[in-house]
Image (cartoon, rainbow, N blue to C red; front, side):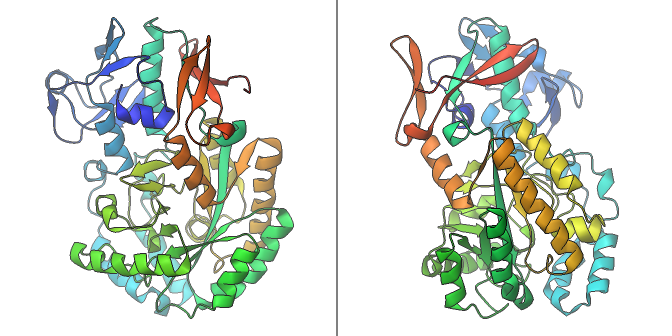
Length: 443
């Protein structure tokens, strides 16, 4: 069984065997599998005979209890999650060379100037074909399509796995705050009041250098009130990933700040990222990769609504639109888009990750929208069985789940591994041609 598929579902290792193609041709090539958009190296035979966007599902075959595939699932998942497809989908943006200059000088531009420059930069975002707006779950649908092929073969009639979230929750929702400027830092206590009134906990990402002076009493207050404190970049100058050698020097300082602040999580400024360099980080989880990056300064997106590991670091992707993009680029002062995104993610049992800046929800109109969001998040927990968690709690759960599996015991399936008390066995089965999940009975 492909390790990537085991990691995603936590499957029994000997239930079904996968045989990835060995004659893979390197490169990014888009194709379909089970109707799902995929990208990555394919079997040489497929590349010679197939066409762009060709559906290769018919090339998968089950012989005995072995599913032979015209690709390696791990390569396809990594191609998407690590954004290696970007060079194949996005031409160099005409303003890319000015981007770093803009973010270095951004704080000195009046707000109307910033908004106009960003509107120019993002004017063609609707023409981007991939990832799919507003939520892209290509990785998740790709893994599901593999199980569909296996189930259609008749080798098994249902496939047990460890359910995605603890205590049988149908999905997960987290709320995060990147604190960018002194005004945002000053607004944090009031933001905490609003969150507490709605019964919603959240995490604050703090810039450790240059932007503002961090009162230790504020960090202590956040933790005392059961909020979470993480590191936000180094100095938020937009150049963290501009040069690898300088990045690694900065990463050393970031790691030191994380230790001194007692933080396990991180998010880069402006959502800049290079996942191939994450080995320099020593924190446990990152939140810098968008699901769809159409409205981010760095295009791309990880194409998944689930956490995933980048080496030893757990990535918690940003799966909804930032508040700043919503207000400034889309000119929307409502939670309608957030509700659409959350509904798409919830139906696929994913992670609903919201990002709202204290800096941008201070003015009355934006504050009213934010209060509506808080009520909506509470609704997700009370009526949609979503797990309302802190990012650190998601990190702890996903790490525990990564060590669990299901075993057949006394005629039934059960979860084994540390933390199994909160885990549930689930089953993937066919409903017509579609894959559906159902939870097993509580042990």
